[in-house]
Structure formats: structure tokens, C-alpha cells
Length: 224
Image 1: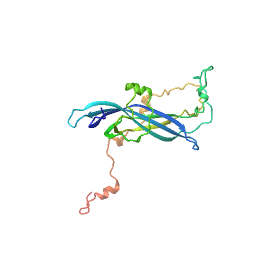
Image 2 (image 1 turned 90 degrees about the vertical axis):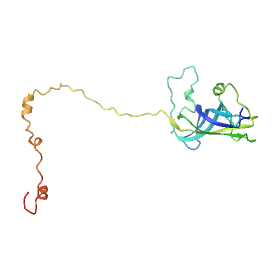
Image 3 (image 1 turned 45 degrees about the vertical axis):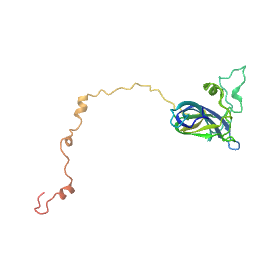
């Protein structure tokens, strides 16, 4: 259908999955390369003729990206109760101290789609599509014998993080238990109130300062 199409329009896009690979960078201790492959479920409106009604077609778009982040390094072996005594100890592998890479993805923004002729030389490196995504589309995709291809532009906001379990030192302070019970005051509240001075200033306005009195003096008659 794409080979016979006159034009295409990008209608909707969704992130299917993200494959993440994590590898330490040689000669840069604590730095890791995060290789990400994004798989997008793309919905296109295919026009078979200039004035024809569009036909919805779904496809797959793939994008690869690499980020280098600092994830620190550790020099201890970590063991936990998750490991079986008779099974292989997966915790004692060389990657036991690697952090965990996490990618947060917002809803993608469909920008545009372009129908082009397929290059004689591959314009993009081949990607391995996971079996779970292939089953979503019912099997294998069209091979290199197709004459046309669709290039899509997608706006994507993402956050790449490295997570690692760390030890936190929290200081603990001693406390003492009181040996005597606190006794409340038995003073008469009426006597306490009578000892308070009457707030005279609260009922009368403040006196005008001396410098302001001079400012309000009438120089012609001498009255204030």
C-alpha cells in the first residue's frame, strides 16, 4: 500500500517500548553509557490519490540514542536472601555493582511524515525488533524489496537516570526518661489575671511625636 500511496500524514504516535543497555566506559571509572532504542507505534493516514479519502495504516518507527552518565562505582560484593543456595549466584557477577538505568518518557508529539524513495544503500542501521513487538503487528515487517519508505518526525521528552542503592548514615541520639512526674501549677487563675497591668494604651491613640508637632505648627499665627 505504501508503494502505491501518493501522500501520507502522521495522525498519532505512541511509545511501545524502550530497550535499554548499560555498559561501563573504559578508562572513565564511574561513567556509564546508556544505549536506548525507542519503539513507536505510528498511525498514518495514507492517501492513494490527491483527492481520495485517507486510509489508516499502522506501522513501527525506531529511534536509537546514547547518553553518558555518572553512576559512581563500588568495590564491595553484595549478597542478599534472593539467591538460592543450590542455584547459580547471579549476584556475584562482574556487573553486580552496576547501577540501574531508568528512562522516563512523556507522551510523544506527532510532528510530520514524509514519503520518500528507499535508498539503494541503507540510510539507517538495522535494528533488532523484539519478538513481543513483532507479535503485536502480526509477524515480520516488509523487507528491503519495498520501493518507498515513510520517514516520521516525532517530538519526545525523556529523562534518563542511573539508580543505585547507597548506604546512609543517620546519627542516633540518646534520650533519658524523667524520674519525676511534672506537676502543673495550682495558682488561682483569678489572681493571675489581677496581676496583669491594665492596658491603657490599647484604648487611646498614641501621642503625636514632638518633631511632628513642630511640623504642624502654624508659623503665621503661632497656633498649634
